[in-house]
Structures are given as C-alpha cells and as structure tokens.
Amino acid sequence: MENNRKLAEILSRIDGRGFKAYKDIKGRYGFKAFKLFIDHVQGDPYSNPSRIRVRVERGRTGFGPELTSNHSRTIAFCDFLTRTFYRNCRRFAKQERGIGKSGLVTMDRPQQEILERTAMVVTREYVEARFFMGLPAFGRKISARNAKAMFFEEVPKIVDHSLFLSRLDLKSILRHIEVSEDADALRGQLDSLGLVAFVADGSLLPRASGIDPRPLKRGNIVPFTSPESFRVKVSLPNRGEVEGLGIPKGVTLILGGGYHGKSTLLNALELGVYNHVPGDGRELAVSSAGAVKIRAADGRNIEKTDISPFINNLPFGKDTKAFSTANASGSTSQAAAISEAVEAGAATLLLDEDTCATNFMVRDVLMQQLVAKENEPITPFVDRVQQLHREQGISTVLVMGGSGDYFAVADQVIQMTNYEPSDVSEQARTIVETHDTGRRNEGRGELGGIRLRIPVKKSFSAFTREGRQRIKNQGDRAIVFGSTLIDLWDLEQIVHISQTRAMGRAILHAMQYMDGKRTLEQVMNLVERDLDEKGLDILMPFVVGDLARFRPLELAAAINRMRTLKVRQFA
Ligand code: ADP
Ligand code: MG
Image 1 (spheres, rainbow, N blue to C red):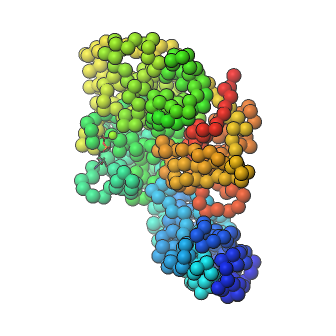
Image 2 (image 1 turned 30 degrees about the vertical axis):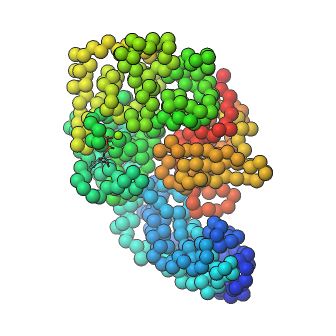
Image 3 (image 1 turned 60 degrees about the vertical axis):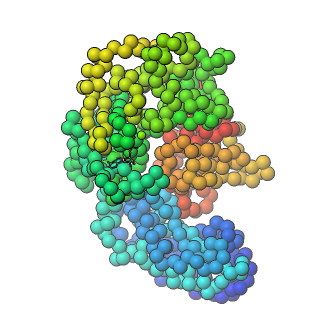
C-alpha cells in the first residue's frame, strides 16, 4: 500500500505523455478516510473505463450491525449504498474532462429492483465500492491536472457523501432495508399460505410508460384493492399485518375488457419475483420465486425439447418428444417455453394473451368440427392447464379476455374493471353449467413427465474462431458467447443489463458441471449453490462492479436459446 502522495507524484511525472503511461498508476493507495485500489487501467480514452475500488473500514462508517443482520438486509443495504454512490458520482464529478470517456466517474446503476450486485460489498470489516473512472486525456495525452482533480477532490467527496452514516439519513436506509426484508418474508410465506402471489391493497401497479419502469405519476391512478373473497392477511416482520389479494395455487384466470388493467397486473406478478424499492408502488406485489413468464417467441432455436404434451403428430412424423428446430413457430416456441420452464423447476406459469400464440391457447367448438383432432397436432393449453396443476403441481395465472373456453378449467376468475379486481368465479361457473358449448376436451391421457435433457459440454465454446475468449452482453437482452449470439429478447423477467452480463459468465461457470450425466436443472442448481455460498465474484477472474444476480430459471432459458446447444435426453 502506497501513500496517496505517491499517486500524485506518478500523475505529475506522466503528465502530457501518451495515454498508455497511465498504466503506471495501477496499484493501491492509502487516503485519509479510505483505501483506493486502481485495479485496471483502460488502454485508451475511448475504451471501457478503468476499474477502481475504494474501501472504508466498517468501524469508521458508523453503519451498525442491524443493517446487515441477515442476507436479505445486507443485499438491500448494499443496494441503498449503490444508489447513493451512483447519485453522488453524478453530483460531484464534473464528468467531462477531455476526449472520449475522460472525466467519467460512475457505478452500476440500479433500477426499480433491489438485486444482489457486485458494485457494493459490505462485510464486518469494511465497505467496498467498485466503480468506474474514465481517465482524462486531451488528444490522447494524459492530463494530470484533471486526473488529480478526480482522484483527490471528486472521489473523496463522493466517498464521503456515500459511505458514512453521518452524511446519510438512517431513516431512509432502514426503510429501504425493511421494505425489502418484508418482500422476502412475504415471498417465503406464499407457499405455506397456498398462494402463488400476493398484491397488497394500496399497491400502485401502472408504470410511467412502456419503456420507463418507474411508477405512473400522472392522471387518475387507481390503487389496488382486493375483492373481499380473495383478501388475505399476512404478517410481515417490519410492516406487521398487511391485507391484499392472495392468488391461490391452481388455475387463475384474469379477464376483463381491453384497457382495464389486466396486463398491468400480470406484469407486476412477473416482476414480483424481485423486490422493489420504496416508492415503487409494487413493494408488496410479490410472486413465488419460481414464477416464469411464458410467451411465444417464433423464430427461436429449440434443441431436443419434449413438447409432446402439447404438440404431437407433426407433418412428416417429426418427433415431438425431442423436438428441434432452428426456426420455431409461435405455437412450438410457446410449447417449448413451458416444457423448458418445467424442466428447470418452474412452479408457476404466467401467460398473457397479448403475447401468446392463439392456436396454442384455444381451439373452439366450431374449429373442432371443421378440423378433425387427427389433423391438428396441437392439444390446446386450455385442455392441459388443469393437468399441469393436478399432475405436476404447477399453477398458472393467465390473462385471457378473448375466450370463455377457459371458464371451465379455471379454479378462480378475477375480472378487472376500471383497474379494480373483482371475483367472478361463481358467475363463470354458472355460465359453464348453463351453456354447454359442446366443446370436447382434447387433453386425453396423462400429461406424463417431460423428458429431461443433459447438456453436451462440447457444444459450448467461449472462444471465437480466432481462439480468443469472448463473453459479453449486448445490451440487456443478448449475450455474445464465443462466436454465438444468444438472443434473449423474449425473457421478460430479466430486469437489468448486469444480470445479462453475469449470465454470460455463468454459462462459462456452468460448463465445469457438464459431465454428460447431469441434467440441465442439476447443472443450474450447482451454479446457484456456488453463487449462494461464494457470491457473484466467482464468475470473474478479477474484481468487477457490474454483475447482478439472476435466477437459475433465466440462466437455463438463456442456454436453451443458444443456437449451438446440443443435448442428450435422459434415458
Ligand atoms: P389490458 O391488458 O386490460 O388491456 P393494460 O394493463 O395494458 O390493460 O392497461 C391499460 C392502460 O391502463 C395502461 O396504459 C396502464 O398503464 C393503465 N393502467 C393500468 N392500471 C392502472 C391503474 N391502476 N390506474 C391507472 N392506470 C392504470
Ligand atoms: Mg393486455
């Protein structure tokens, strides 16, 4: 550990020299209130910014043990500090100090969800912030004056305002932690309450826009209120007793007129697998950790997936117990999404008619008369959804305003009217009893277990044709893995670019467990175990501040979308 005067000396010495001379500042320096780690120095003012850490002794921060007394609280506390640090980077760093990224000081930026991240680490010994700096240059020549301003004025100010309790509002910190801890506790109770999801009364579900996940603030916003019959009281460690809509296990139908809030409710359930920040409106809109959004994604790749419960007797005798295609149709992609989710351990399926393949969902009585069952490979979901629950214990929540055929198979029916849910289960049942449509159930036979698959390690390569290892994200919905692009556009439960980044690395990590015997789910579970025990840092050979935790369900889904994937089916 060098004294920080050393850093100033090096900067003075390399002033005006070519950018590469910045490499000399790599190292560790002691500052008055913290240690500064310059882990990696960028090669060029335009390339990825340099990776920097600061570490403050926990004892000096004033952060008491109650902020990190369990895993849930620690994650929320780190999340709070990350948001604070990010904000203070914007506030105290001038940001523009030359060409390219010169002057940039930034940290991974959280959005509405509270996620485990590598950006901030809090242990009993220290608080460590991992961030990024664009070292300053004019015309590719080092600007020592600017670099000194960044290291000796801006960074200390950012650290001072972010990592010391005396500068922060303890009430806000505790609120952040407690809200998140309550959501975790609620999620943990769902199963024993017989629920797949819970939405507290007073929740504000609509978002600012289709591309802005912050809460809608303008216009008339209708707070969520549960119908009496679905109202459940839960008891949370911080908020105490809370009432709201409990969605029971089984088959739940959400219907109602167009624009009455059906998809908004389902979207909240999709993202209810994550915790949300105070003020989000969905703090207590929580769904079970194994809830998976299912949708059609035509054009995707499918590798030997067993879609036979839904699709059989394809033209030319194509096998649907091990169905492969490089160009799925809407219905086959949706069938595969369900089989793969079940294979990966999904407990609840979430579907919205807006993004489903119609012929996968319904086949009405008139169609049954014109097109004989022998000539229709698809057994529509309506004839399988109950079996999924009865035989496999997998619940479904389905938004469907377009077909009453689902009345007959729903355990409960919720109608959205002007954004207000009501219980219309009885009416739906009566309609079924008094209107025999003559439609025949086509779900003959047991659903049966789907065949499990064993990933073939050889089909994974993190190397490009030129022999370089390349793993990176492309935006938040694509991974470049070696020379393969894995398109994740249809995975709507990925909420942050840092999850995608981490998933790319996790595929590499998963490869060590592919021994030709383990199924995909077993491999995912081992990755999950490693992340639980050792944290996200194990995914990289060096320390980085921009990885976030993802679910094994999304990781499995990413692997399933890799076009080079080869599997063997479990015999
Ligand atoms: P549906 O799926 O029933 O057609 P949406 O869920 O897409 O309807 O909602 C339609 C519009 O209403 C969206 O713009 C949404 O943001 C808005 N909205 C949803 N819920 C509420 C609410 N509780 N209060 C106010 N606006 C809402
Ligand atoms: Mg909709």
